[in-house]
Image (cartoon, rainbow, N blue to C red; front, side):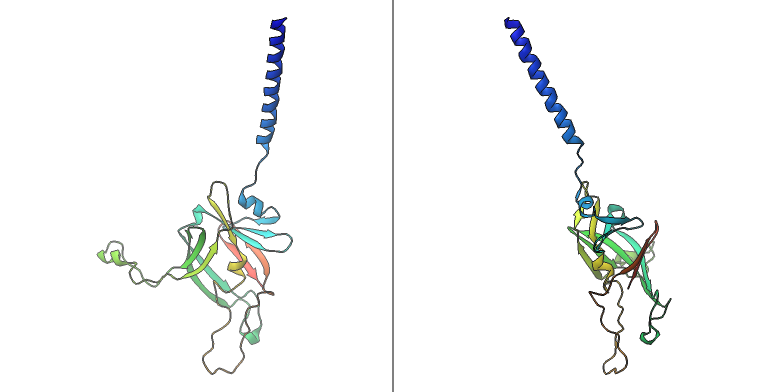
Length: 208
């Protein structure tokens, strides 16, 4: 009788352990979203050179960068998609271009303009001073909003980059005493995305 009692206890204990393992496995199957997935779960993903997420409710947009984008140079240029002749903004008018570089500084993403006016022959001893007295202005610094679990992807605000004049001054500069037509300031409330076209080798953002 004693042996039967011991056997029953063993079976009950085994059954209990087995049940716990089942629930444990079920819990493990529940995937936890990383910071980027959680932040962009209500967004439309526009894949391309730089992935852009646009919120389906309010249009707020985010730019996703990864480690492959860092410490590399990119060409930025702007032009008028359409405009008003009286304001000097006619369709197709070229606004300018620049070579930019993306870097990570602690919890921020920095964008600098590279100086392309100087070139040093790498074989020349003078190339040792190629970075001397060369200005590379910091034009944008954005706080990282979210990261993936492996910390190889970073999410920043796209609105703070594209919906202002960080990259390109739109309003012309006027000399002192000028009394002609002057373009107004860029509106923070009326400026918005018209179209975002993303491709593997370039990202095209049209702003109204």
